[in-house]
Every structure is written in structure tokens, then in C-alpha cells.
Image 1: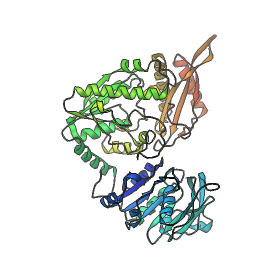
Image 2: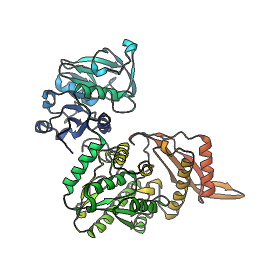
Image 3: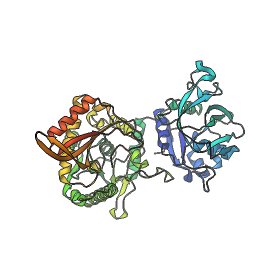
Image 4: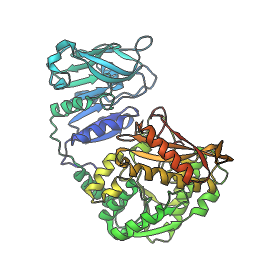
Amino acid sequence: MTQIQHDRLLIIDFGSQVTQLIARRLRELRVYCEIHPYNKVDDAFLRAFAPKAVILSGGPASVYWEGAPIPPAAVFTLGVPVLGICYGQQVMMHCLGGHVEGGHGTAEFGKAFVTPTDLTHPFLSGWFPPEAGPQAQEQVWMSHGDHVSKLAPGFQVYGTSPNAPFAITADPERHFYAVQFHPEVHHTPKGAKLYENFVRLAGFVGDWTMGAYREEMIAKIRAQVGDKKVICALSGGVDSSVTGILLHEAIGDQLTCVFVDHGLLRLGEAEQVTRMFRENYNLNLIHADESDLFLGALEGVSDPEVKRKTIGRLFIEVFQKYAKGIEGAEFLAQGTLYPDVIESVSFSGGPSVTIKSHHNVGGLPEKMGLKLVEPLRELFKDEVRALGRELGLPESFIGRHPFPGPGLAIRCPGEITREKLDILRRADAVYIDQIRKHGLYDAIWQAFAAILPMRTVGVMGDGRTYDYALALRAVTSVDGMTADYYPFTHDFLSETATRIINEVKGVNRVFYDCTSKPPGTIELE
């Protein structure tokens, strides 16, 4: 996607879980940037890439570890502004003659407050309230075990925190900047302002838009695919829908979309999806009813990782089957997003921790004979929605809550049965209907019901029941990387629980999940 017309910023990734959030902040500023792992950036790469500025990301390492990730020395001799974040600050100091300490009293995790020592530098413009003077404080998010104890020559301190004496530092002459905290996360409320100041100091004008992304990705798809055929895995969610429409715009009739009904969809979903695409878009669409295949393979399976891997394997087999019937098909397109990637495998191939496997992530087995096209792999959900608007998708589709590829399988902890799935479908439909009736759908990032692997005693009328318990989940989020539970009123929860128990046979108890992400994930499995 590299395009000469854009000034480019290079983000060197040292393995932080939130590196992509840096790119996100820059995109909001209409700055074109690319993330590359530290072990792929050498002097030759830097010469070819010719960045206008460089950002060194955070990461889990210590500069004193054997084989610790280190940027090439040429980063500091390019003559362009450099910003170090967390580990990026530490490795900058380490490389340029400062000192980093680890051990007792150096760690700082969570919310902290930075106090300025100098308010005059434009890097801090608009960040600290000037009227507060030296008493000003600004909330930041820390996550570091080591800290800088001695600045490299040429650097000055501009802000401190209780456990980071050099929380904000800069070498104004060389335009080197470094902070110990993470400005990219929303727990640093004014962090975006620091990125804005940095890119303005670096001379970026902000000429990269979602329209530019659309044009560049279309060009990239055409270059990758050539005159070959592409199969698109279409689920009907916003991710796969945007992928399908983007591909259709790029390659037209070379695209065939395959909608797989795996028996794990929500109530009426198959009919809704196929109708929308056939009525609104001139797409080649295959409706593949493979519910018996998937449910047969999942019968008796309770381990969540086995569920995901089974579903992933069957998706591949199904797409392979349909690919054989399409002459010239050499590519499989899917709507993988960055949160899927970062929770499955490091974006960089580096030291980020795997949280869960994902059926969309990890490439395709060689036996399938298809190559991947993933045009949304570096985007967050809200960016995908912005791209969908750019492509003219209806708001009714753009605003749909996310629905996972494994479907109801991961909302059915424990053993999967057709009976439990039927109960879950009906209960989920009531829950979403309640949310819509109360005008809350658009205020919630994602909401769903999950059937729990437990039965509870109840009483209905004069009789004893022994039925399933249901959990309701609703979260607010910006990008899916973090989330808070939605604060429904007790009246709403009471009304919803009553409706589900009365209308859905097989449920006699309803819980509401109040867990944030982290420590939980959005989905239960």
C-alpha cells in the first residue's frame, strides 16, 4: 500500500499489544503510516522507506535482556524527528548514551499523573493547561517495569511522574522526543494531542483519508489478484460486507462470495444476509447450507480452542470445495481485522502474547491451494465502518453489532447441542429486540446472550423447573481492544429477564455480565 504521494511515518514495533493504536491515532490525524517489526528494519530498509518521522513503540522487553530488540543506529542519523514510547524511550536512551534501571521501585502500572518541568516546548503545546503553571497535572497510562535513570546527552526533562523521573524528555536540537507512558490508549485522555504536536513538528500536512485508503487498497487488490478469480468469505457482518463490496469495486465479476450457513447463526440471519446482497448488489453469491457438517463435527465438543479450530478447519474445507467449482480461483478473501490479529498472533511476528486463536488468522494450509486477500487486516472496527460509508453501504449494515466467525459456538460454553443453540437463538433475539425497543442499539458496541453450561432449579406456576441459565452481555468500546460493560438500568434488566424466561422455553434464570475488557474478553470463549 505504499504510495509515493504521501509523506510516510514509520512505526517500529517492539511487540506492544497496543502498537496499532499508535497508527490509529495517526490516521485520525490523516497521517499515512506503516508498522514494521524491529527485526525487519535495517539500514537498507530505512533508505528505501525514507520516512519523514519515526516512532519507536512500546514492548515487553528490557534493554538488558539477551537479544533485546534494538533499532538500527541509522534511525538516529536520518535527520528526521523520532518519538520513543515506553520501551521506545528506554531503548532510545540506551542507544544514545543514557541509562535505564530495573528492579525495585522502577515499575509503574496503570493511571499516573505527570507534572511539567517546562511548558515552553511546542511538543507540549495545548497539553498541560498553561494557567496551572508548574502545578499542572495530566493523567497518563503507565505500563513499565524499568525506567530511565539518566538522560542521554542533549536531552532535557519536560515532565515527571512519581516513578518515572523522566516521563517526558526531548532533545530539541535533533527533534528527538520520548515519553515513558502510552499516549495512544484512551486512559491517557489527551494523548492524541501529543501525537498531533509531534506530526506537526515533523511537517506532516495530514493528507491521508479513508478515501485514499479505498483507492490505494483497490490498486493493491488489483495488483495482487491480476486476472485471477477470488472467493470471498461473506458472513453478513460489517467486516465481510465491506470486504466483499471493496473487492467487487476492485475486480467486479472476478469475485464470487460464499455465504456459509454453519448452523451457528442468529435467528433469521441467513435469510437477511442473502436477501440484502442479492437485492442491493450485483454480486455472484453462493448460499452454502453446511449446518449439518459443522454441527455434526461439533457434537459433544466442549473445549473452546477445539471448537475454534474445528470451525476454522471446516470453513477451509467448505471454501476449498466451492473453489474447485470456480475456474481460475486462486484467492480467498476474508474480513480479518486488527483486533483479531493482535489477540491471535503478534502483528509483527514478535513477542506479543497470544490471547486466543481465531478462525480467520494464521494463514491457509498449503493443501487449500488458495492465497489470502485481507484488505482490512490493519483496520479497527470503527475504521471499517468509515470505509463502509465511503463505499456507500447502508447504515443498517454498517451499524450492526459485531458477530464472531465461530458464531453461537463461542456463546455456548461447554458442550454444543442443537437444543441449546435453538434456545440461545430465541433468547438472543428477545434480548436484541429489547435493546432496539429501548433505543439503545446504537449506543452499544456489541450485545449478545450466552447459554451457560449449567442448569438451575426454578419454580414456574406450581411446578419445579430445572432449566438452563443464560448470561447477557453488552459492552461499549471504541475499537474492540478494550471495553466496558453497558450500564443498563435495573428496570431494563428485570423486564428483559422476564421476557426471556416467559418467551423462551428452557431458560429459568438470567445473569448480566459486568466484566470489562481487560480482564475479560468481549466474547465468553
